[in-house]
Image (cartoon, rainbow, N blue to C red):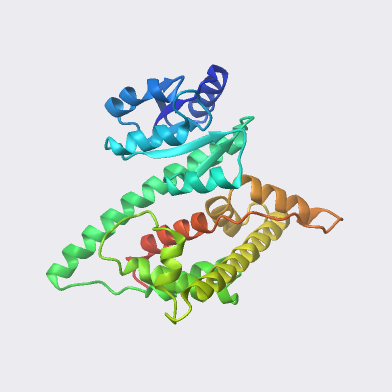
Length: 293
């Protein structure tokens, strides 16, 4: 992977570059101390991923991302921020940010996030390859035997121990809707649009979409708790190693594991990233869709 770092703190830029190089995560193809300085370089170099600080003078991280996208840049973005509030996170997700790196910079967190970003890029490429393959096979009239989307999603959710949760069926409907779209976009549309498209009744859409979101949130929390318990029991368990770092943020898993392992069973309130969970579930579903049952 080719990275470009945008941060007005030179120490942070040096630290991120060191982590990337020493961890064999890719190469740093450029850097800039401000959003304004970064624009022309990024547009000419075309890096795979831009690591960008949220708070910068003249042009902040969100404004820089908007400018790059308007000028045709299609790479991925990772936001770097010391202060994370609900409004900032919401705005960042609307602009296409999928991952955050928190300051002060933690080596393990950076490595985990960059590995997930690289995996996501690989899955997007797999999505394109699969769709091209299906189009070709369909034209030849020799479509291979496939598992249904429902079977695939059930198998994934069962691995995380939440197949019995009410929200699991909502996730199945969402995945079926996404797989049946005419376009092949790898990124999810807004959550509100997803909920509205699987509503069984059109009379009280607002009320039903709220219920759908609550059911999905409870199911994801159950998956987080199951994986945290599994990780404490056996950190090398294949299910924990695969699902925990892919579907959840590094900090969430670590905090919940400590709580599960503590003699004091009080649990903190976890902010569930529904869109991230559904995004990874969609990419996993697409990857498995063309595998014979």
